[in-house]
Length: 249
Image (cartoon, rainbow, N blue to C red; front, side):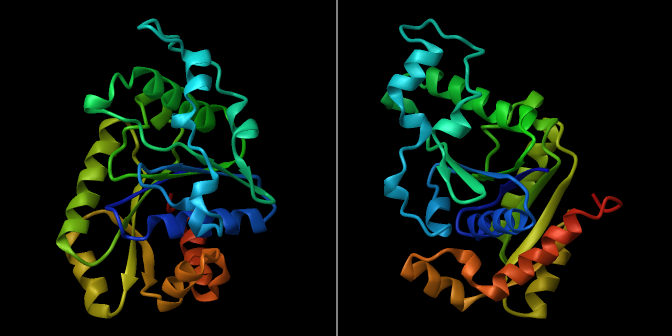
């Protein structure tokens, strides 16, 4: 299973990624979680401090060795060893933090972009594990070739037009590069009115809804893993089971 999870910042996609990964791991599957969000905090959602992990995009010596420098770049650089060598092993799950690729006045980002794109493509096209990408609202890390390996794009949204509009834009971008299976997960739901709001304002197929959960806020304050919250795990489990219904997907 190859899943990309996207959505407007703050909608709870990282929590859902962490819970999905945990549920697949509990089934005995090998799981690779990829934090591809510039402001990623997937490590924190898994109960680890992000500061302990160096993002791959900041490994300058490694990138220079694999991609090159001075304006001459290897477009097909070696990345197959990265998941094993540079990920955090979480007893059945591996966490790989991509980090942000600097732009604008920070200098040429070509080496980092080349390396990251090759890495994501390798994960999606060559790995047999369950791979779950925690992405930004954009789809910068997914090229057309990589998109063919994405089985499902989950767009997490909360009740609100900004979140809805972001979801619709993600759908457009995803389909532009060939991702057909784009579904919505409604998060932070407090009432039937909010469910109806999402249903009335979005045309995408909806996998399900996850309720607002004060317990997750307390877990975040303590720095604990989100899957210690039983209610959240049960609700995401229902989302996962719907993903596995072949007639639906």
